Amino acid sequence: MLNWYLQSGNDSDVVLSTRIRAARNIKGFPFVTKYTKKDALRIIEIVEEAVNSLGYGLKVIRLKDLDDITKLSLVEKHIISPEFAYNKNETGAIAINDDENICIMINEEDHIRIQVFSAGQELKNALNLEMEIDEKLSKLIPYSYSEKYGFLTSCPTNVGTGLRGSVMVHLPALTKTGNIRKVLEVVNGFDMNIRGLYGEGSKVSGDIYQISNKQTLGISEEETIKSLKIITDKVVEQERLARKMLGKQQIELEDKVYRAFGVLANAKKISSEECNKLLSDVKLGTDLGVIKELNDLKIRKLETYTKPANLQKITTSARIVHIHIKDRSVCNITKLSCIEHICLRQNTKKSRIIPVL
Image 1 (cartoon, rainbow, N blue to C red):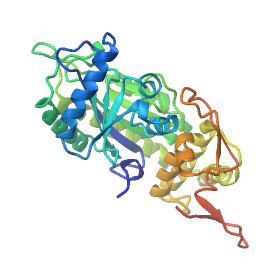
Image 2: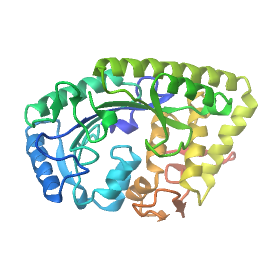
Image 3: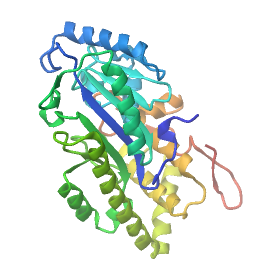
């Protein structure tokens, strides 16, 4: 079975993925900002003992036992945060299953961060699984909890439910038609966060935005997800309307997306930023039926395996420059075109590009 980030889901033409994250802390221990290394190691032991009887195929792995490429690979898949990968080598750990749709970060910003991932728009199902895991874990580990404030967290903005729901959305048509700013202002007005590709503090790349709830206090988990779904549905609706507008300019659309396809298929050196932008155009062309050579699965593989660390993990014929774990700016891919690994060039009369994923 394919991992979640290679699958399609509801509204996956616009909604790339869903994540539900719950922040929890262990009663009797200082928050991460104040604890000692001894505290951190003991917390890992407590969580590992609980996880071993939890099920779901979870295995605890300490960050210090992962090489830099593997950690960056998890960041690129949005499974762990960049800050966690870069700064918690000695005191951090994860509990993760083979499908990678469940990952518990240990000693990130809080002692425990339960995460559930899914392709497409699956907020309700992801919430149900997260709450199931949380319920079982709460019987094994005493949480820091206040009858007045709810779950106590390191950052005051997470106090209450400790729940953060988020969706990754691909909005190329709204960007190209100049309507993106208006839509983002509306989303902000509904008390939602708009962030870049890797969450807080990151920039938008490849027309991909992360939408998540702000409020965690005075609202239930179900109400939070209901509000987020309403906003997500509105964004999906507006993006699809914008795509219909682009579809009326068929020649311009075909030219744009096939130029992107051509560069990706033939370039020998390309930055991650340019690759993301071109893939955005190619995905748009595929979703609108303009590009026939690719499908959703192939696009998802491209989006995952053209990221620097993931590319290096699947091929030895690429040379990655600037792959150091602390440098997540621009990584050049040389000696290998982004689609050369994924497509074979077949010398026919029309010299077609034949995808082989």
